[in-house]
Image 1 (tube, helix red, strand yellow):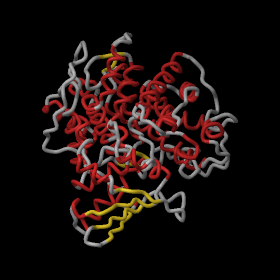
Image 2 (cartoon, one colour; image 1 turned 60 degrees about the vertical axis):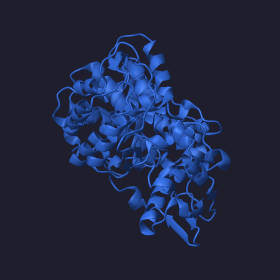
Image 3 (cartoon, helix red, strand yellow; image 1 turned 90 degrees about the horizontal axis):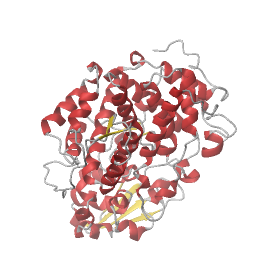
Image 4 (cartoon, helix red, strand yellow; image 1 turned 180 degrees about the horizontal axis):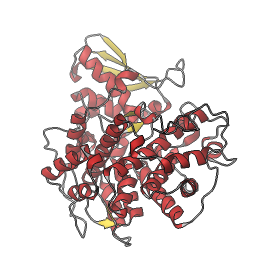
Length: 494
């Protein structure tokens, strides 16, 4: 541990914030990491690999991205997962990062940032390009990026700032996370790391406009842009390009220009660097493949079905009450949310997702396919799901209440608790989820190779070179595999 850390005290000002983070990332070593963080990071890598690969066979836009990427040329350093061909690190970071959010099944940290898709694709691309990168180095690089990203988000004091200020945290903060991750793989010193963060800052993007009105693919590509930008920032810094300075605390820096706050929580950003890792307290994996704002609703329904058993046929009407700005966003406009036209629309719809949950007691990848979205029983249930704001609630009360009126006259009401929502996922569950996602790969992955990859990741700290894991999960191809119809005949889906 970094027990002599001069920043392990209360910070009264912002002076040197960017430099402090750069120094922290450059100095971070595997031996600094607590065992529980190593375990969590290995599970993040497993989970993220699975959801990236699953998207290649389930998301039509994945093939568009792969086809575009395959035509860009350049040195074939890094694998485009699921499709098996190689491209540059920049393009692999863009493609694999985009795949990571296409199923909306990737993990979440703090409140709404998808932290692993901003770090894991970058770390894998840089490790594959660099060669001879050990599992310990990969873990350390992912931790470095995750620590930067989680601290940045925790330092923002504005309630529901993504809605009020109009930014997706995954993309906006992912540029910094990607630069830190890539820079740590490259072993940049603190000067070059500061440059990398400065170069990342000059690429920031991620407006919430992508979530309003008609659906676009930009919501799934957030970490594609930030992954590309993070790799570019680190490699340019390594080559000697200087970056902007004081990009966090400066007059026109992140907080002043993008977040628009004059009083960031500098303690959350800088306190106990190297000794405390916020991701341990603010991370969870997804049980269901949809926007995280659907999760409190799903959890409340699950608990109500356990506590007062009822079937879908017993339900007269359902009302989602209150919650965050994200809750309301995923319920409005109600009619179109009840009839999502695309997979990503359905994943950003509380009425549709709640209907799927009520019908079967879970939500699966199959629910968001063309067949699933057209299911007449699910659509009939979605027509019974409504939304009601609760003006009396504080802006910091994120979890909505679910009210279910049954045909026998009973009314059931429940809010998912923070403890229920933060309950850790088991390695067994995440391994099953990984195997299920990999089974949808555009290029089929033999079950034995997927199982061996999962085993290797579980012992990642003992591996001298991580490239065999990637090779097993993406059999080499010189061209894209032909598209095949997706068949949902798996015994278990998630």
